[in-house]
Length: 162
Length: 477
Image (cartoon, rainbow over all chains, first blue to last red; front, side, top):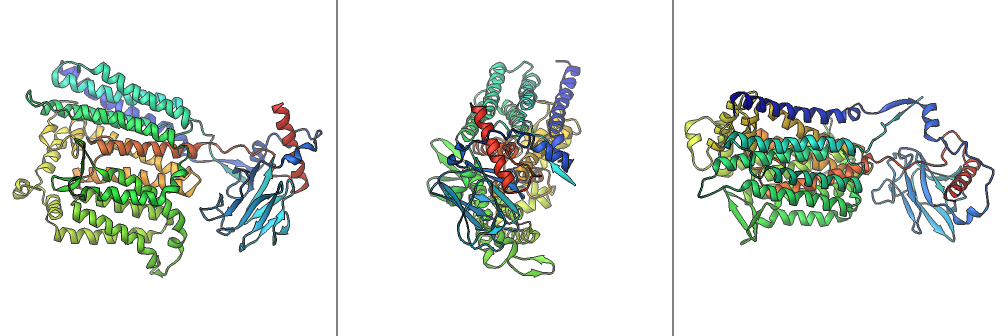
């Protein structure tokens, strides 16, 4: 091979190496710039396009006996997290051993428990510091959770949804 | 009022495929250039080699498409590029060191290990559906990790090579169990610290504005410190002991955000290292070879002289800014040019420009790991991703620092580049773990249906649930 070809190949390889590095960084560029700031009103409408406008006419009764199928965190640091409801109880708190681990400074490490009994879900406070609230009533003894009720644990709000 | 919304995440599998093409071109191109420049013709098996590498990369890519569609798109191409470049350099040194009677076959073995490594990574991705299952094996991982560390000390099983007793011989293969131990220990530290982070972070006195942990919480860190010193004393391996200790201190810092831990860790390590330098001749020789590398009697001292380090430095100097080109230098003059000193070999033939590009690839790899740790929601995943990507970055620092005489030379391997089966397998497993965790970090949260942040509580929400259910029923239909 001629001297020129060797030099060209040598430099060409270095160029290819840098093309790879720079294109990898290019892929990550969006990620490096972090997050997007959106005015709240627009974010809210963008986040929930369907249900507010969905038709509310045919609210049959048959669905209630099927009961809720999942637990949704609707407010607090974990907003948007869902958990499927099974036949076992759900432990809520900051301890990593909980079923739903809240990253919430206002909740206790083992804060509350949700458990099913006789086709109903109940909420029970486990001696938490700041208390558990079902809508606006403080949970002292286990309470049945009516459909659509909001369970407040620390700064997080949980709902049972079908 | 504004809200902060993360960018819409695209799965990025197409981008990954594009980067994989470039990464494969780097590996196979280097292999071809080595043949061209050393022997004047393309290597005989170049087509088979290229096809084999492409098949491995594509198999892994397809596994990702099925099993982890949201995994990070840059991690796999970075690993493939580094592995390919490492293979080409090992092949190049094989060519230089082979004689007709005694052909050197490091490259073939490394190629086999690459295949096994990629398949192992695929198995990890297929079997491990959710990284959180690993948390169940926290203490199993601790026992496994400690057992792996101590394995070379078992008589009859462990062997001493070049003064360090870190190898295990099994059926004709020699393995370094410490490479796998670091993954097991990362799993253990993540599981342990996620449970104990609050006690470690909050309990304890504050001295001079520095938050110190309680003495009894210091227990585990002292155990690990003793363990890494034991590796230093009984297995005579500086690098591995540094790696384990660094991993634990880094993960403690990740878990607690207390600078105090880093200062305590550094203090303990410096103390240990100073004592070791006074007491053990092999550690003292490393220090001597670092501080007085260019003294004649240090260079010629045998064993443990600085001849290797000095010739590597001259090699990199002769490479200069743009390198001599693949196959045009003499990296084979340095002992262990294919394993411990592969960075010096690459520095000679690719120059500073190429070496910086390679270091940037490592930087990108580690950055993706750390980004994954930020993005993933569960504490265990955060610590595990942060820990294993720290290991990759730390190994790079220790190796490159040693070869360029920034810190004393230690016997660690450069991830993916250096020759060594255990290291390659362990690093492919690390890549698989990072891909698995990044998949759950980048996967968009399931849509919250029936939730309207503006609506009042109770009755309205009740109605909404009904509407959603009706809608679902109609959709199912």
